[in-house]
Structure formats: structure tokens, C-alpha cells
Length: 73
Image (cartoon, rainbow, N blue to C red; front, top):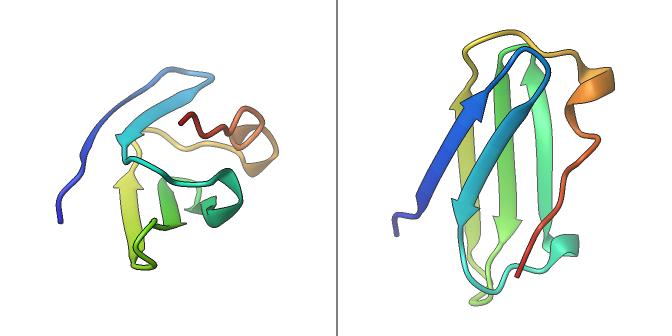
């Protein structure tokens, strides 16, 4: 199944919108795999897994990268 997403990156922020219905915040995780790769893993309502990897335009530091992670239903 394909999901719609968009993203942009500035000098200080990476903003990603992934449109998936009915994902609970406790069932999703965002990680920085290296300084230029971001991954999202989520358990969907039907118990299947969603996995998304994004190659970033610029390096990000782990100490600042996940401060504002949030899931909105």
C-alpha cells in the first residue's frame, strides 16, 4: 500500500508529513540512522507494519533532530 507524504528541510529543521490514518503515537518510531537518513516505522491499525526511509538533503545532528516529533490523528 502506498502512502502520501511531503517533506522539506531547512538549516535547522526537517519537516515530514506522512498521511496514514489511525496510527497511535505509541506505535510509531522515528530514528536518524546516520546524519543524512531518517526512518519511520509504525504499526498500522490492521497490525501490518509501515516502514519509510528518507534520504535528507543535508546532515542533521541527533541531539536536535527528534525534539518536536509528534503524531496527529
